Length: 178
Image (cartoon, rainbow, N blue to C red):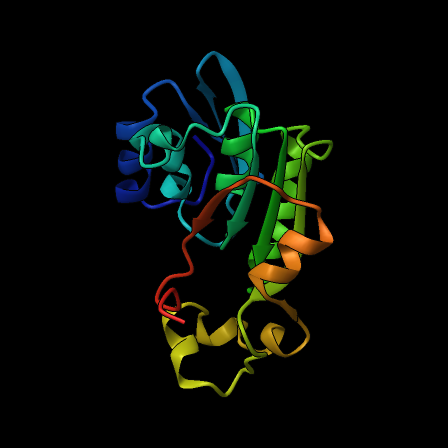
């Protein structure tokens, strides 16, 4: 089919999205609740968009609400929340590479009117690339992007965006405990 993915990666993708497509430009396309979705997956696996199929966020009831997405990754959850009817999604991603992918995926799915993505960590204090815990959430090859990222607290997000009520999703691969 002209893509450079392993047989295993393709089988995993098509097991989740049997009518989906893997494209040569490192994007995948599939349908979510009757809506077309296109996601750039770069150098991660095509199946990384499984959040659209596995239902782990289906019970959040985001329709008509503001969503604060801490750990927006490559844009899968911000796009998902927008497609589920969130009025506004404020997504924060510390990994610079994932932030770039998220920006691209938000644009590919025409969600930029409802989704804002920030290259920013959410924490009580700034962390840096030498902090040991980052091995859990930022691959070694992407650590340098941490030092250029801003940091905000949840209180600052609420105050700066005049949020009275919101859905909070936190998934930062090992740093949730702070």
